[in-house]
Length: 114
Image (cartoon, rainbow, N blue to C red; front, side, top):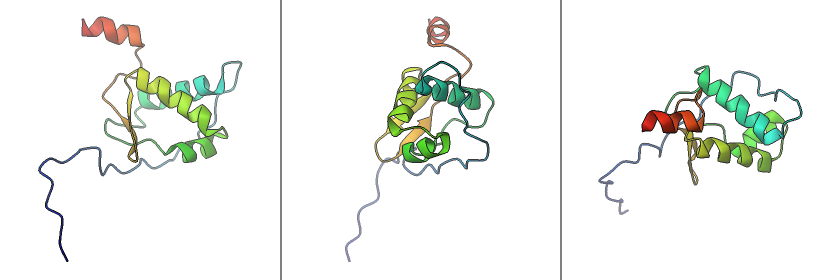
């Protein structure tokens, strides 16, 4: 049997295990759209230190089931997090936490970067 040659560079996001889910994923409610509520919930969890840089969020289907929302809602929240620079989305690997500052707005990060 022929073996594949070893890769010369290792992708650090390739074998990141998902973070165990311990706390409740109940949305806060209110008049805001659900994807914004989920976005705020994940930002809060990041700010509280539930996830560290390099951790993987649960997959879309699991998040949708945990929060009682559709996958479209989860995708909307993840798109906002990605635009904020807090997560990196990778096909087949999931959503990986980046080194962003969860408590900051996009404008605050931009001003800090200048």
